[in-house]
Image (cartoon, rainbow, N blue to C red):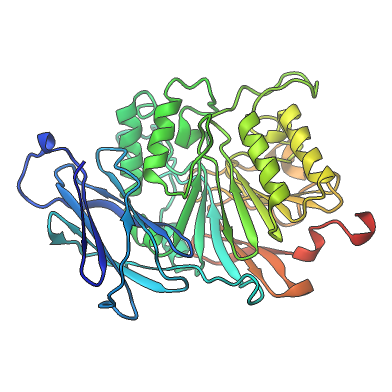
Length: 459
């Protein structure tokens, strides 16, 4: 890999993305997907893009919007070219609370995009001001039709125009809650098949402006990982993990035993993004709580327990591809992995961890589950699905009258969630809204942050 760093009052990075033995043309390459804003921390940000296979050199030039000629020495690091075309630029030593623009050149030719290429670094609010308000989008099950590989009959994917509504809904970042690419049978049978699906999905024209407009974080579920309902038995799980890491951004992925779990902070909230596939074994057939069927695996579970204990965040969002606490979900739910589920819930209760909220996807409908038996305060599982895939109607099954479901929260149609945290002191609250394909709010529910902790009399 060739790398050249230049500096002329703004900072730029030149990265060789394809070995010279693959060059087939002297013409400049082009951007095939992206750019996507991964994360933007106080002093660092990461930009992802995918380039055509004939690209020789990719250059990213970044500058403060307030002064494009400002001469400051900046260091740029690249995370590595893990695939034949996926490229990440890690921009280091940025100024806090600053708006930046960036420009991309391939083989010396500046690329143009029909949307702004900008981002803003985080403000340092701690010990200075009250926590800032923030909003984020959340959703799962993004199936984009591809006629050569789709199921016969009526297309499973629904209108992608909902992505335009997501773009027009103001928020600080997006969490993609699993089933984000929908690997088909012809995809997960080979590594090249999985790469095809990721590349095809990420290059959709409606995803470009959306993913460039704000930070993007992602987890996976079975349809990003491999076959339906698959786990650690999947023979290509390590290749699947590698591809996920190529196409999504994070300050760090997983632990010493693998996986792609991660965490990040935003204002007074901390987000724990779980890997519910890499370590997963088949569900336990026995109700014996001592059966140690793995859902997260011991290393990831220890990481989560320790992270929750040491977090000072008012809200702790635990994001999982599968539902966690729904007692009427008898298959793809952490509650059915009794040893790990009981261990995690006992830890939350015994440690008096405040502010736990689960976010999940997978179900092809949206709902909010509320359990008052886990801790000294209600624990919620906010499930949002689908963005564009087919819809499931639980009202036609035994789940139709789930006693733990918040009244009115069941929504079985295309949707995404807008989740807002606003207010100060005892007035600070979490608001959940389901947004339909037109971006209209079809359901809303508010949870006071003060209600998500153990009372003084119970400590």
